[in-house]
Image 1 (cartoon, rainbow, N blue to C red):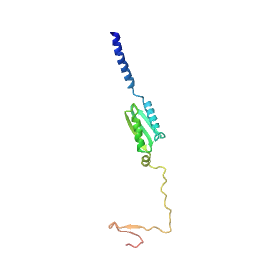
Image 2 (cartoon, one colour):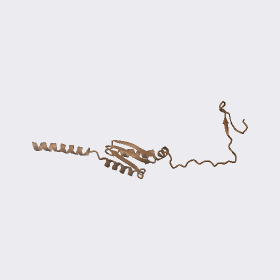
Image 3 (cartoon, rainbow, N blue to C red):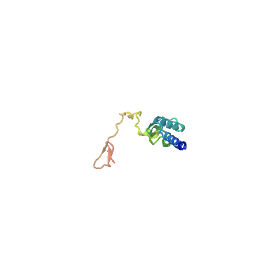
Image 4 (cartoon, one colour):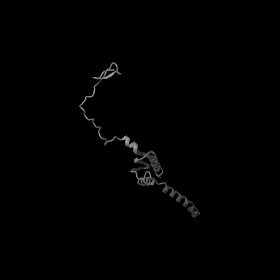
Length: 141
């Protein structure tokens, strides 16, 4: 009787041990590597400088992509990796990133050349009648 009871419990114990071993979450480094591998399989994302950080199932994506479709695709790839619970998508779209950051290399506005041959007429405006403006020295209409 003991022998038959042992063979009934043994498969249950093995199934339980297998279930516990399979539910072990992958470590953060493995999750990040798996995501980088998936991103590298997409022809639109493979040459992008994308950073993947993983912390206890929360993945943060950062870097720059060409368009919103690439941004969304990267988030979907990350979410599909086992062990990922949440994706924080900090990817910037190149055209949006360029317009939101100030241009530091822009040349300062150039001053107009100073031409002293004929001074520009001064304009005077009356505060009582804001629509009336006349140039000094020119006949008023």
